Image (cartoon, rainbow over all chains, first blue to last red; front, side):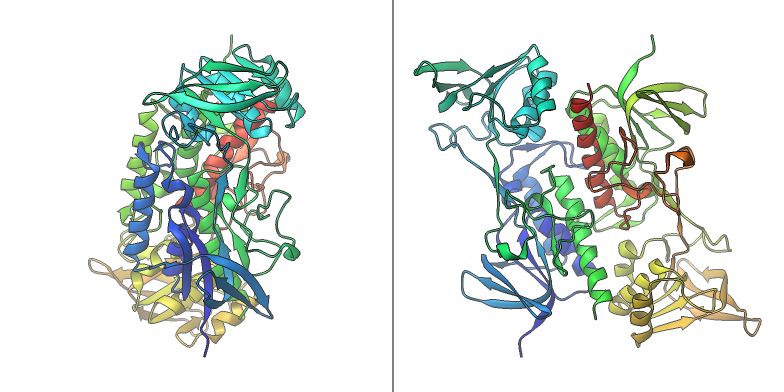
Length: 307
Length: 307
């Protein structure tokens, strides 16, 4: 007979692990299926904003979370979910290694991946001046000069942040205008220490042991230009890991993020989502933890009310 | 000239400290006004469900949070807020020691206090078998016998939890019926290891170094009866610390909790709330952290858009 689990958590970074701790403590019969432990968190550099840990690294924090999981004897299944189905009352989870699992509820906590420029230097200087998270890393560049690459709200917000924290900031926009909120654009344009460079395609990041600058193509003049900066923030979008969720369920927004309410419920009963994979704007470890816990306790309530 | 702060955070437990860390990192000019550090968290016993800390105590965790705050050089003002006003664009915060502060935004993170039975033994056996948080502490009573005191949803949920975790659970209800959700009542009534005692007024908690049991008045027979239990969970309501918020702002629910959306915004622009003081059902440290961060980043966005 097929086991029908109470829940299957997909993903084992901050949100998935938090949900798992709560489900285990409630005595539920569940699985975690994940590609890795720690996801994007494990790739973060210095972390100074997860409350309780004044200064750590993403990797250390991921290890602490893993230790917490193991303290409950929880062993994830290392596999990739490639398809989710709903059959009558139960979900079916299909993995890359061709296993199938059935469950009454699902917690999607697969995170999202920042989009890359795919230019020379980008990977080499990651954590050596290159960052995909301004909220996390801008404070490391206090009084220094940074470049922000992008043209949407995240880039604009990073620009405002840089104006308050850094000596000087450039926003490098490949287009002739911004596509973000008007109010944010106006605010950025008012900042005396923020310079906007339009029609600029970033081509290369250079440095020695750390970032020293970048080169971009000025599309107006067709010249290659150079900027000396200490930090480079790349804000050209996030790719949520939600390909395995059928579009016809209509629980994803235009960016592929899963739309959740404040209880981390989706519009599909029994399906919960938490962390960076959701439409929640703040992609932060502490927020993912709170959402993971909410999703876990949401699963408990759902099971109590649907027996 | 009066300083107008970017923000004033009221309270310095999990939510307030999390908000403060984020505001500081964004270079904002803000205050924390609080009665104490750690609030209810500091009074919690063993904590095994704040991700990253497999096993700690509420007090230790409160100290870690305080250390985190101090690593940023943030010094709270120890005072009690007794009144909030909104004058034109700014908030005015009035304290017990008759100080007044002005701010563009407010983060309310004053927590809530579990209601007490006020019976002999209740205070003496707190953390020695008496708990006000089933989600936190029920797992400590695995395979044991517990009593749950209350008649609403929290007591019913604790009963279902006990049925999964403990050998035996009693629910002691002072009324002849439950006032919780019908579906939860039905679920509890189905549990073979949960016994309901109606019309029962708990009178005394007894034990030696730990709880051994309780005595209650059976209102039907007018007899004093005794139950031997290892743990006692008191779920007779929470009192959110929101007296200083004017009722005419209409941001509180019937229980006095502050109603927030998923971004921790209230209906009053510029006023945010986070943690146990909100209408969010899960009163958990990790959830308060996530909400504190959301409120902090919400303040940043609000200030960017309202200059």
